[in-house]
Length: 435
Image (cartoon, rainbow, N blue to C red):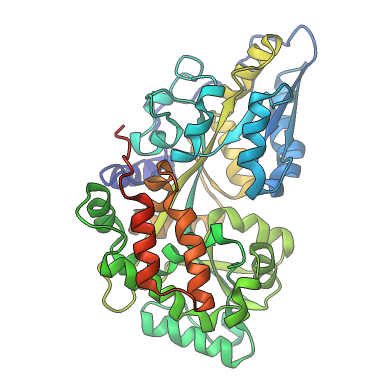
């Protein structure tokens, strides 16, 4: 898969304010283009919420930069779990022990940190060449660029190919076939789907994997962001009702809210669940848990009465690399060298090959067959993960409301209509930025 294909797909999502990969035509210099070793040892500390990536960054990715830049040592840290990262970074940035660089959230999740980060417009050449749809995730509401986009995540259904072969199952192309696959797995003593419903943050993502086509994906995005409709719309309510209706197929069924994301990933990796609705970012976790797992992906077929005519693959720009505004001045030059390298083809290729994600750096190609399948499905029918792309700018955010509401639906204490109305009420009056 070459970069021209990636750039072509960018245009589709740009027109819908969705997510796309960078349509860059030139790469910033790699580490070999530095102007010599630094005069003294400089230690750069980078923070991230990606605990599962620490070894790969420290042992494979950043050593390539260090080899070409003697005197600069890079230490990648994930100091806390994902759900505690935002607060930890906020505290660190205003204190004296913050990281020199950090992986920051995208879209609305970035805004609370911009005052403590350096604008990169004049530090990293070429960022203005990125398609506006992806660059939006790295911009402050003031229009300045505060991070180098990291990766683009797609959302789809993972499945265990060996289990499908064992039970004579095929990738479903229709909703009826999807239900038949779930029933067959259940009858054979295998949980059809592993869902980490104990962790509310993942449920809006699961909801979009299963129901984005039902509520209309990009068509609904245009209507809800323009104020033509709300999350109380009958089609959106029907989509989240669908997530509840499928509960009997989730591992632990009625007790699914006791299953965490790590538990669900382990169940799928161990072959105890046949499918897993999730994001690209989880592929390396499955392979770490079981290097021999035979995994494939597919977009969930359109449910009955779907607004979208075809299955869709939601996606979003997932964070970026930023420089602490309060960095030690003695480290500034080294930090600028590093963050420019983070927008190079070399860095992007290392991320793609070792973390199995879609890099936002220019010129990256993908050889992994699972990545190729995910991207082919995404290209066929892309959509924005609007909970993150559009509604992370609100307070409260739409997903922070929907996640607990879906948990309550699983527990039987809330209806889909109530959940949709609560999300609509939560974001009522939220002014979405225009970039």
